Image (cartoon, rainbow, N blue to C red; front, side):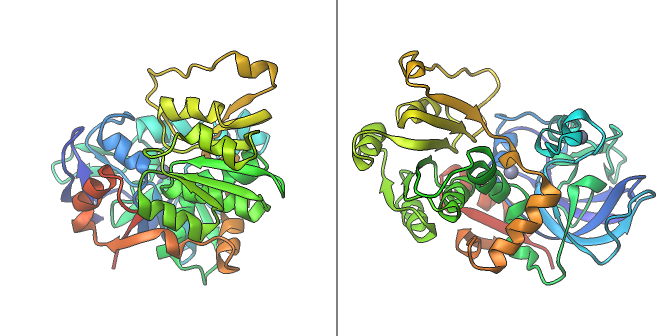
Amino acid sequence: MRIKAAVLRAVNQPFTIEELELAPPKANEVLVRTVASGICHSDYSVAHGVLRSPFPVVLGHEGAGIVEAIGPGVTHVKPGDKVIASLSPSCGKCGMCRESKEYMCSQMNKLLTDCTQLDGTTRHKTLAGEDVYALCGVGSFGEYMVMPAGSAIKVPDDTPLDVTCLIGCGVTTGTGAALNTAKVQWGESVAVIGCGGVGLSILQGARIAGASIIIAIDPMEEKRELAMRLGATHTINPFVEEPMAKVKEITGGIGVHYAFEALGKVQTMQQCWGMIRPTGKAIIVGVASLDQSVKIPAAGLLAEYEIQGSCYGSSSPKRDIPRFVDLYKRGQLKLDEMITQRIGLADINRAFEEMGRGEGARSVITYS
Ligand SMILES: [Zn+2]
Ligand SMILES: [Zn+2]
């Protein structure tokens, strides 16, 4: 079928809106008509070479839509079902999936770095017949997506996809980091560095868990205000106040139970170490480029400081994505507030420029 998609042909180039040929789903794949896609910071990182991908590529992985067709062997969804695309293909066969750690599915790399389907081939081609890759085997910056069956997570028919698409990546990554990775307990204290879509989701997870102190750290005033509306109890502008000293001051000199990093910068990862209390935990959610290292002062080790990465919110998508949809419907997980603007596919380059300037929490592309 012919589809329109935003195609990226090289690093640091604008997207071009092109017509592509999309092949039908093969065995254990699903064709989905895209209803909406969030623009995630990882899309930005690929577009600017911080994360690698082959080219040309259709980016977009925070997608949601309606199943149009299923390949042989697919039984858990049928045409007409609403689905949210998961970052993990949840292959069900690897050692990690067998332990219900789908967020570490060993097939994920094929989607994230090779940008192919699980059989190593692409479904998109240019009209001239050149292969076009799709980020996460999804490519939600296109009118239709073919994805691995395990990536298509069924959600109830009354789910508004132009809001809940954020659950596909940012919300599951952030809220899951608080609830699954850290397992924040009621009454505990949390600091979150970076208040984009992921950081705001972390602090919402901390609020849902019942944290008593939630400190949001971001230089942009609009993001700090949004953080307060979504559950932060304190904010810090790190350009004005030294964030580690301020976190200690807010927590009576002792530091927080958990400090989360949601920017992917080595410097702020190290700052997390300076914010936690003895026995506290630094949880690294942001993704730095692979050639960088984090230096940890040995002093904290004697105080039983811990540092832990968090990938895709330590989530089991088929369990957690419907739960997050339910929390949204009950008003506990606030997603409408996180959407700065809804745009058409043609406005994608402008939205990426705004993201580069750190503006807004989330832009969502909607398809008519
Ligand atoms: Zn993402
Ligand atoms: Zn697996």
